[in-house]
Length: 338
Image (cartoon, rainbow, N blue to C red; front, side):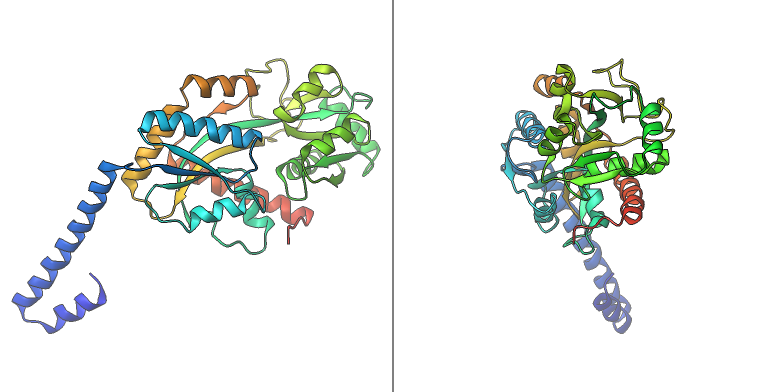
């Protein structure tokens, strides 16, 4: 009951007060019925799925394949709209300010939780302004080194770094990028000091690593797999909690001597805050169902991507945990995007 209704009830006769109460209840029921009706007819027009990345990258490809699969299942086109910029902030903010009707979504990435601390001021709140639908996929990183480095496993790499503090360098796709913070987290947990060299993107840094200008990198499988296969780089470990079915012979960083180290790149769908629960539930069901689509399973298998498909509540918990974890790393390193 709002203040106007309370005042009206307080100043009215008993019969008039009852009328005000009944009117308030009827208004609430009408609003509920409107939401239910909208949810039952949802979707009645195309859905805009924002990809906050440039066209052609791994995250964008995942976004498009998932969009196609959901489109077949849900009966309406899912139109992918590339809105890159500011480490995904541009595309994500469009959804934060969109109408909460389920027709504007974003395929967010792990950068979303990094940005919460990396930027002193964001145009949105990373938790409060969104309705999580589901975390769909998780991709572990690989620890890869220059083959000429005198290390064949993680323990030997750590020993070498301790013998040469601050001398072993690594490239990243930019300050505050997951490829930067993942190494800093590794260095902190292993008790070593490494030299960060930021680049404008992953590829230039990997090229210099192959040339022997750097010692190691922690990055996506997609970025280094061809070079590992050709022998231009050497894979030491994978960053997931358990070994990857796509690379069963590659040990995890945890079993290689750094207990508790686990990082991954993830992709998940966010809707605007206040999107009706029935609409969020329908989206959740459709996206999770689409993880079993043949084209989606093929992409995941070839790229070492792990399907997730968790609940909105579980996704919120992951967002909160990730924000807290990266906040500690960012504050320890002094990384900033401002």
